[in-house]
Image 1 (tube, one colour):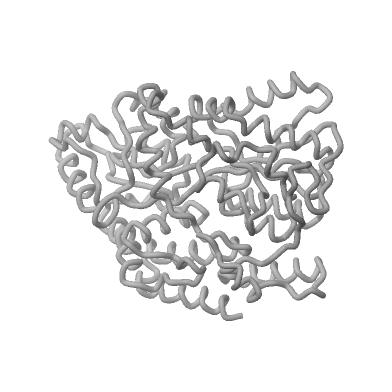
Image 2 (cartoon, helix red, strand yellow):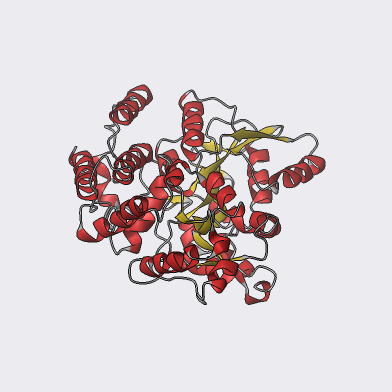
Length: 448
């Protein structure tokens, strides 16, 4: 989603507002748990000339740096860091492992930024955080001409920009995939993966009749009340033809289409298509359930592919696009962007490290060893399909993906979505009431 600049004044801080007051205002909004900031506020910065001098940022200083990112569950990152450290013994990078939970990662990064700490140098940001971090001047505007952006997929590059400035560099993209057990479907006489929710439910019913399917549940995603629920909710709404916000950032979630999407999740929990334990699942929980043979279908990210190939379901699964109401659904656009803390030391080293980690060789390694979608278009070449059979599906998923709201107050937005979606799937509110309440929260914020 591209938020219109003309709406920025609605949420922009007055010129006389101090950093302290602005921070207080953000914290007050967050405490109220309302979805604020459906349009982007402005941060002044000068044009980038590619010289390494951007706005007030001076990319100077060499020496040790840190890399703050979520825990690497694939094992692919550390060898790259070791290679950098061997080549740069006086400019070593220390890996600061943050929690696997995306909300906790974001909170720790914000706390670090609000104290203007230099503890984090390079940050691994979820793609939907770029605007928030840039608008608050927590990350530096980057010299755009120093990165090979023209070789990258355009939708992926857009996630690293804020108001036409580059504030991050794509490390990997992400699109949701449907993992499915080919062996069980084949035995049940199902020859093709489902493209609709109804087909998926019907396939489950056939598989359930098999003796081999004892103890196997139908479908799971990530439904714990955290960022993964925002992703799964948004995918359900978009895959039913609805939207969370329109192209101008206006909330438009209280609609018949959005209700059909949320109803799919709610009804699936009620009838057992989604097992009750899935309401506690994050990415790793759901991955483990699939690898342990407890799920017929799983919605998850591409990183699962390489890990599942080393598990008990190796050779017994494949991937397909996410199903939707009337045909293939839409994934939420995911991925990670590297940003440079505005308060970090040794920015020259940090810039070189960002170029190193995001180069084509290293992103190809992340594809090979961790199934992480690369930002470079060339790495989706047909010649790689035999080695990485999921690439065509992955590219389709990214092409059809819909961004979550790219807003400054993203924490407030995702908190509201998580709260209302979780109330619906756990049965404490109807889908209609949850969407009505969500719409009202977003609308009140937009009118402030």
